Image (tube, rainbow, N blue to C red; front, side):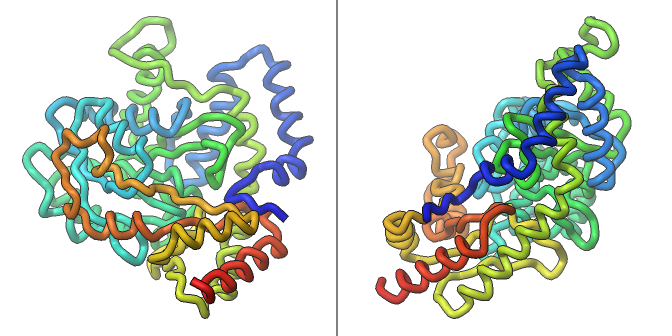
Length: 368
């Protein structure tokens, strides 16, 4: 039995009829871009997250770009985030002309260490982007306190945390704006690219809608410099079929995580920590071991394929060397990048597959 770290194929078999029906409705509607499906999905997803407005865009990267632009962030500004994240978080900051500034992460959760925020704030700092990574929220209360103290905006990066919670609040509902991605691997993923910015601020909502459509509103007339960044009807239609199942997807992910925890608790793997303040959606089940690479190699020999999300922290990449960071500047981030990896995690993963993964890990860990 070959076990992939992620797969949509079984899910597609289950949901195929509903998805194809939704796609057919779009093709027969006569509207392919910014139609009724996009409008409904924007409203429904924003409502799910507990905010008023949602603006569908073409991908999660551009969601961050537009959010930064909507706040007027650009040349000469600094934006604080983490190096333990996907490249798009940082590339979006650079795209608008701002400078990313990194803080280290918590060694238990792998999320932003909010206690380190104040020491990197300067007169150029305009925004904080907490990345709710692997399915879990950053500790937002102290972060919000720092942001208010220094008059900084907050954009939550929720690409990996759809449906997760912080003290009863949905991920994405605790800031000026939040962004997400509907890339196929996500907890709420579509069958192509897609993203969204959500907010409670009506002025930001209007600004975002202009920015995603060349700076125009109702007519083809640019009121400001904008972009071509639109969620299309087909992807919105697919997402509308999946959104009502999102909590069920998360319930199954949490069940898988519980099973992993039970079966691996007696090993020397460092298992995920679920913060007391939140509800983990388990986009990924991230474990840690100093002999990670050897473990991964032996798992592969047994047809079990796992993944390292970020083997190279952003601040160590050649493309961002101009920022001036050096090895040792973010010690926890650098240490974790050498040890963490993700076990298979998706709702249709079977108990049989989970058992095989855990049994194989037990055998490997006894012999290395």
